[in-house]
Length: 509
Image (cartoon, rainbow, N blue to C red; front, side, top):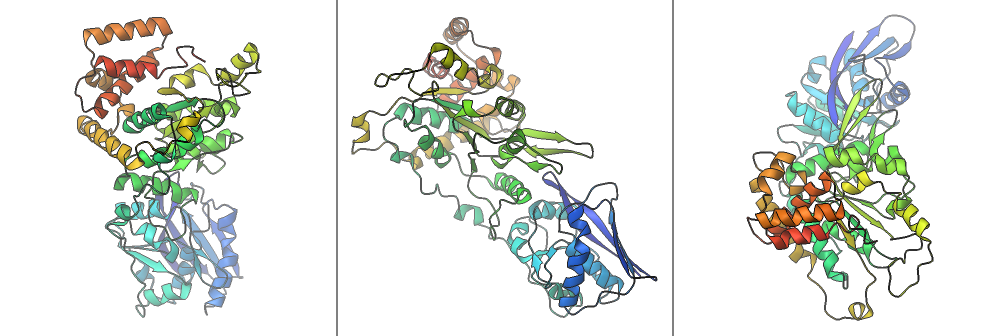
């Protein structure tokens, strides 16, 4: 007897259909799985055997062959347990094999027959919708995640025997549905607030500009000046995720296994802060079976690198390509996968190894060669890709003890949302949504300067020896500052402020 059904697997953040074929043939009892299974898939026979027995079904005394097609693509993970078990039961006549037509099935089996959650269910639901399948049977803990995709009937299963009862039309599985206002319910700015940071108003201004235009930021200052505190509050002034952005972020989290249990959709912009000992694979992604790294987990959010020069040089250099392209391409012998990586880089560093170079109140004990060697750990090409370079001095006592606070995150966020609205309208034909993403042609089109502005920028380029990439970034920052002011034209004030955010280019450290 032969039975066929559809399952799904994930490569990168995209899913593809897998045909599960189960054949029961006469002969000595045996259980073979073919189709390039990895160790987790090969071990499924033991889980399936116990799950069937503990659910009241006997494993057929036949030669069982399971084929996972396409056979030339390596299969990994435990998500094939449930479809293999159902294929065996269908081939043995426990229920009509036709009941599986048009359904996709995924799930890991426990030894008692219960169904455990798996990674990557949201991309699988997207693929099921694209293949026009009539239904998708998933573990109950993954059902809310899968139900986010419109047009797909998602059936939540907790036990193997429940699925069999559904296929026999005795007891239908519950159909999962997503709350249509799920995103709106969870879009608050959290418990952090910019008003908690005393002083550093010029840094808050720079971070507001960065949030409004999606620009990368580097903050330089002595220990305890508030760099980390400010960085962790940056997501509170970013605009809320759109539904399409939330789906993309959730897909990455689902594949990486970082989506909290029972959560259907990531509604807050990610904030990732890897330790400086992270490897290049941990940061960029990869592995034998490619997994998303920190840059992809920060997609549509913030990647915060504290103590930037302490990261290994080869780790920092792998950031250059995704910062430009917004994607990571990982090539292996078997396949090439893409992971999204459109993030805001926010980095913090001390001006020297001891941290007090340039501090008027603390003595710096570092030699000039030490300072130069410390700063040179961050390469010029990487520094070119950082739009705003901000000096963060120590906070004076009068600011720390002041009763008055600066503007709250909600006020700054409203400014950012208004500026992003102008940018979205301006860039609507290009499919982009913020100034930092503008191409060279779009920058020339939307960042035109007056004669006086061109003269000012020319003098800055010559005096500070700025690169062509720095020139482009100054124009984009000036465009963002004008958007925050609600101005169509870039004025001299906007341009001067943008040039001021190139402190390292000006050799001020």
